[in-house]
Image (cartoon, rainbow over all chains, first blue to last red; front, side, top):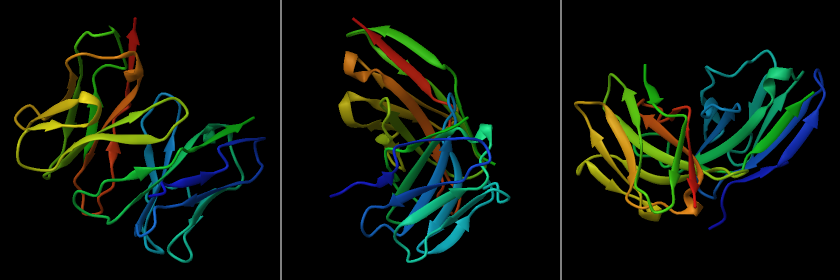
Amino acid sequence: EAGVAQSPRYKIIEKRQSVAFWCNPISGHATLYWYQQILGQGPKLLIQFQNNGVVDDSQLPKDRFSAERLKGVDSTLKIQPAKLEDSAVYLCASSFRSWGNNEQFFGPGTRLTVL
Amino acid sequence: AQSVTQLDSQVPVFEEAPVELRCNYSSSVSVYLFWYVQYPNQGLQLLLKYLSGSTLVKGINGFEAEFNKSQTSFHLRKPSVHISDTAEYFCAVSGGSQGNLIFGKGTKLSVKP
């Protein structure tokens, strides 16, 4: 079974530029998550999708971050414009369902450096 | 609101020694508890999970954890560590209706020869 795929693996941009990350979840997983992991901290949920609908985006900085999952499969996360404090690893995860003992499977992450 | 506290940010240990990584949580609802491992430049991999039933949970790579409801703890243990166990370990709790995970800040386990 293929795992969660993410691209790119690494990205370096200057502040005020835009960047986009892509995620392809495990086939059949209805729930998709984007996490931000700042160096020295645990992952923090940015947004959760159930199929193509948003379940939780309470911690997404909506003035600069956006995410979509148009067909309920792949997802993109965009930052526009980027700030220095956005430097982090962005992890995508998927699970079969969104409640109860929903084991989440993580991709390798995208390491973003904002200069 | 739920929260997770990992009491040690770094744990150095010699190879073949036992190790315990500590995790405490707070929640007003019943919870599910997880331990994930993150090797350098990789995503998170599930080690083990507590859902219900027996409080002693066994996971992959010889790890186990014990759920203690009265102490709100879920400590991770391994009787004999290997160099390959060097990684960062995250404790997480899930209990909301939406099932999202709340992570601790992580514990870096460093196994020395």
